[in-house]
Length: 160
Image 1 (tube, rainbow, N blue to C red):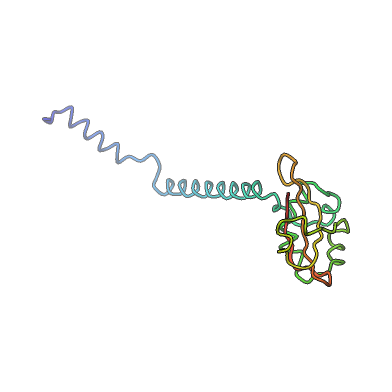
Image 2 (image 1 turned 180 degrees about the horizontal axis):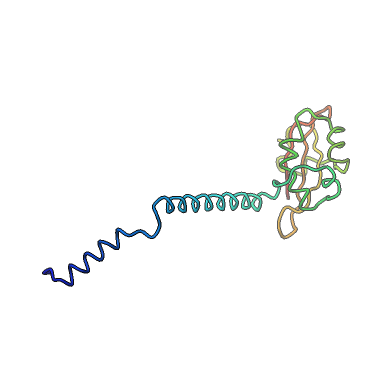
């Protein structure tokens, strides 16, 4: 296409327009960094909330007052991961566990479970933690497997 005066004026306008920046480059960089930080924070928050939604047994630190006052509520279930990870230690006696969690545990018949013969220890006691689904069905329990001297071998959350 032959260059005309109108074309060259339009070309020079476009050349000038591409050189003009609305914001200084340092301000643009700051805005981009702030947007990335905000998006990262939002994604981290969403990941934590998703984990809480997917794992109802994690999310609260153990509080003995709430544990004993909330048998079968969602707060008791949310403390189970903290209880297993930080409060209960292998070798702990059943009497010290009941001092911590209360004496509302039940003796479990291991033959009731398909894998009962594979459970560690020689006997199992459990604390009811409430329903393990959002619709209220399927009870969940904190299972404590004990040795012959009533010392903790392992602990887990079990629902059925």
